[in-house]
Length: 150
Image (cartoon, rainbow, N blue to C red):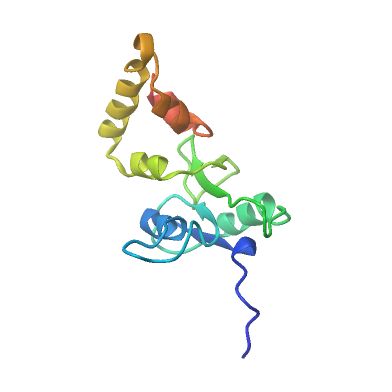
């Protein structure tokens, strides 16, 4: 079987593992020659058992038909539920953050109380007792984090 050539600007990598998603974003360490991401990414909430029907529906609704190609920036998205639903009982309540970052991944890996502590600390540690510049970046596209930062 012959497969068409890999075209990184037309590829969407979907996974629920933070490490797997970040491996697509990062440059090779120690003398590697990759510069930047090798595909667009969609990070899903961790389930550990592959894609479910609602994942495929989300991909079709939000990402099929998006203009991609050489010269266009890569997008890195994160889909999550802000209202307590899960991927298995999805009734359309997903939020899609089109600006996923390594910092947001790290925050998502924190235990719930630590996550709230970090967000609240950054809400009042900035200039004049306001939010830090980091918090402002973390909250873009993330109503779940914004709710915990207050």
